[in-house]
Each structure stands twice: as structure tokens, then as C-alpha cells.
Amino acid sequence: MNEPAKPAAPEDEEIRVGPLRVLLSALFWVYLMSSSGVLWLIAVVIRLVTAPFDRRRAVLHRFTCWWAFHYVQLSPFWRPHIEGRDKVPEGPAILVANHQSLGDILVLFGVKRHFKWVSKASVFKTPFIGWNMSLNDYVALRRGDAESIAEMMEHCRRHLRRGSAIMMFPEGTRSRDGEIKEFKHGAFTLACELDCPVVPVMVDGTIKALPKSGWIMRNGAKLDVRARVLDAIAPSEFGGDAHALREAVRATMIAELDRMRGRAPRA
Image (tube, rainbow, N blue to C red):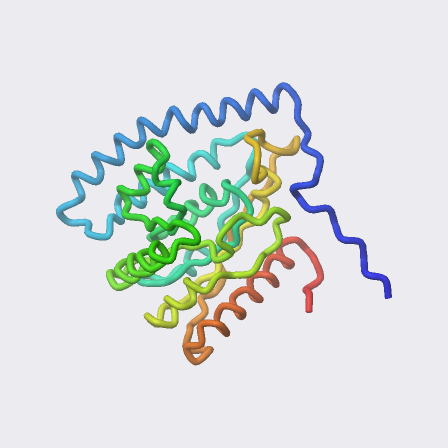
């Protein structure tokens, strides 16, 4: 039996570029960079004022959620949809999201729940935005560095024990075709070790809006970009087996992505 033709990967689709799209994209990035300096100063003030009583930096994170997500709301290219915020439990949990684009980060801040990001160490060096990540005590990671991975795991443990959730991209990098790739084990090892629920969070549409390479927004009309929080999955359902938990979460997310895209579920 012949296999059905494979659909073109989102990265291979034609990008419709015109003078207006270039201009609007440039204005978007100029606004993002210029506004970040002012918002960074506000973040510093918030941290100084709340430091005596806000150990988890929850107030600062809430401001950061507004800071990041307002770019999505103001963008002339994106129409955001955030679903299932109430499924994020209070207290320690590990949120795992698929990763299609840099835009995922802005969209996921729209979940507006307390969590600590795990991100590449190089991002923390970015003026204003990266500095604010350090101010929030988010978690830095150098890929492929065993010592950094161990430090990242311990940093996450501290946050979880204090009652904060963690947000991770278990694929480790952005997907070029928008499909879910293999997962790394760190998030699931932490969940089993500390008996924390894993909360899958689906993101879709961002790869069509902002490709992995390039700065010009894609397509001619407003695109629907979605973040959908799924039901929490307890490690106890798998006897504390991190490998089984990882594969079950990944299968759940693949099935949900098919539903979001209106595709028949895969075996």
C-alpha cells in the first residue's frame, strides 16, 4: 500500500513578503526592544519593593506575564487563544510544552500562572529581557554541559520544594516542522523524584507566524496562535517510572496536537 503524501513542513511553506509586512514586522521588533528597557526598570522597582515578603517572586512573575503577553495582544499578526488556565494546579508542578517558535514563549506567558522558566543560559545575557529572567530567578541551562544540567536540576528542585511550578520544553529545541519530537528525561525525572504532577501545555500556530530563522512575520492574515493546558498527569499512575511517564505525556500531546489541527489520530 502506498503511503499518503507527506504534507509540506511549515518551514518549507512560501513566505508572503511585501513592503507593508516588512514595515510592520520592523515596527513590532523596534517596539519590543525599545519598550523592554522601560519595563525592565519597572521590574527592578517591583523586585525591590516586594523582596521582603515575596520569596517566590510571584508578583514580579505576574508583571512579567503581562510584559511578555501584551506583545502578542498588540501584534497585528497574531490572534491569541489561551485555554485551560485553571488546570494548572496551585503549588509545585512541572509544565511541559511543545516548542515551535520563539513566539511560544510570549504566548505561554499568557497562561498567567506562577512558574519558573527553564531556558538556555545565553538568553539570560540578552539586555533587559534576559536580565529580567535573572531577576525572576528563572533557571539557566547550557545544553550538553553535564555540570550545567546537574545545576539546573538542583535549581528546579529548590523551586518545586518552595511551591513554584517549573515550565520546560522537553524537546530541548524548536521543531522545524511543527511536529512533536523526542522528549528529554529531565522534567519527568524531577516529577517522579518529587512526586509532582506533570501538566502538558500545547502550543500551535506560532511556527506559521514566526519561523525558526528570520524576523519577518509570516502569512497575510491574522493567525490564530493557541496555548491549551491539558489535564495534569500524576507520576503515581506509572509507578514512579520516569520513562513510562515521559512516553505517556508525549503520546497525550501528540494526540492533542492532531485534535487541534483536525487530523485523524495516529497509531
